[in-house]
Length: 74
Image (cartoon, rainbow, N blue to C red; front, side, top):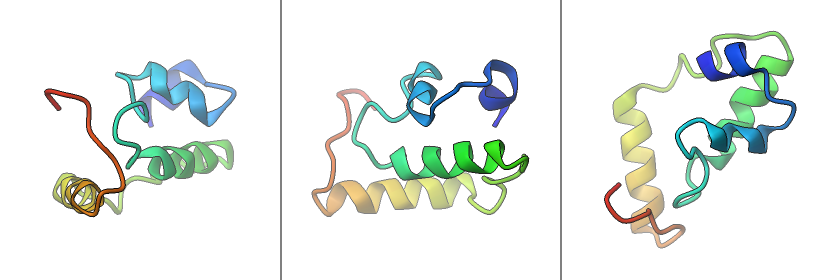
């Protein structure tokens, strides 16, 4: 959300400029779109309901189900 506030990207795909977000296994693409849409709607706490543990668990499940391949070293 800080990246959105500071850089004001015009498209959700521009969030990849924030540390390569959305360019690896693909798990966070929907999450990034959700945050982008929330920001566009004036909401600044769209990710408040997702803890770091929930994020890690969701990504792990996504990958273990064969839906994405993380970049080496991540």
